[in-house]
Image 1 (cartoon, rainbow, N blue to C red):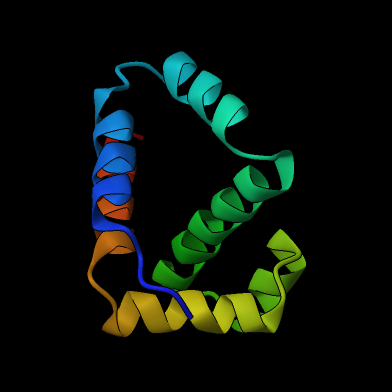
Image 2 (spheres, rainbow, N blue to C red):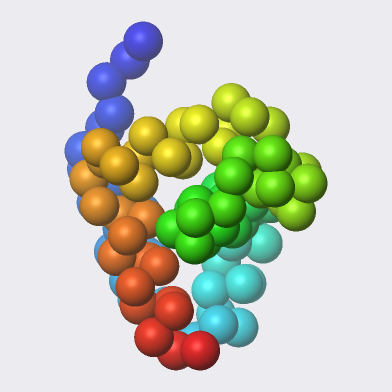
Length: 96
């Protein structure tokens, strides 16, 4: 496995942080990612949302179509990760 190029990652993070509207974000992801990649990221965020609400793996699978492996990985990140999902969930839940 190769190491992540920190400089390339900084460009990615800065690019995402530069986006100001949902439309700009959609245009960026449409250009930068395949439909499948974007859908996979969106699905993981949806899984994190339902895990955060206490839904079971079975229910989340039925709601999202995510595999149990994906649900388990997202759950592990929510519980032991860097806090990225929690930050996104807190900020997006506040908007609703």
